Image (cartoon, rainbow, N blue to C red; front, side, top):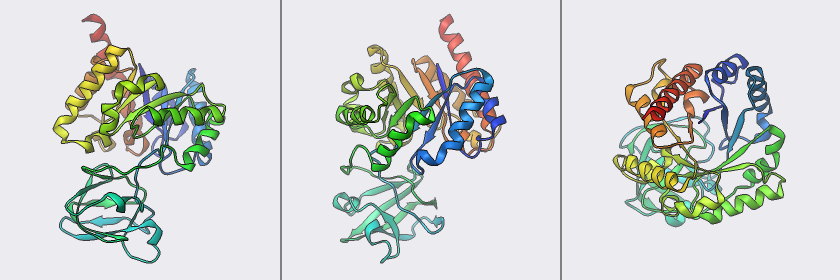
Length: 335
């Protein structure tokens, strides 16, 4: 099984990366939602050096921006309180009006009474009124908001291109950084993956693996049609969990796992596997049970994200992840 961490300020020290590889990690994810690959040379070099020190050839995945809505740049973090009123403004007019900048395409779809999820659902807004360049909302679930966080409509979709210009630039850079695979977010159907394949061929990188992230119901419905174009399916439970009541998410995860397993298609499970360890040296019992479930259902890979990228105990996270995977694999072999 492949075990991935996510690179970030918390784990970029050479000694920390070496320790994580020693525990059993064999791959790293680099999130390109907020940066360009060209700006990450120090990180990718550090990953290669740390892996070499342990004697392994690491897998390195880049997670593209893909067809995802994000808020624009904020001057400073915003502390949003429940029942407070806020205004979303078009990014094209953000220099003329006060408010939280959002993509213009949002205005075509959003309607009064619609719920808007921000920052992977941590913040919930209710739309009260829509004007040509302003969306008036009430905060139903508050939190601290910073730049470039995700935004999604409940019960609505916004048509977006498969790849951004930034994605195309990063794909052309990928091989020079030792990238072995590309994660495409919000895959809706095989057309998205075919477009990515064409871009990889143009960049002379057709040998890179394609990881199709299932983060919306289109991806769930079209799952089997993705298999010929993806090397691995990613059950990305963060945004996928925003598309349904959370109590339904475990069922959808089980269904995706079963379809992949029966078709012999490798799949990865990711998101909040050890979330409590961003601030704790020890995981919850539920978290290690979640890892066990992923392994026992046949996952080919597991991954942690913020736990290693920005958490306080990245090496301890990897220790618990790898040891729990080992324990689960032993059980599966014996039963």
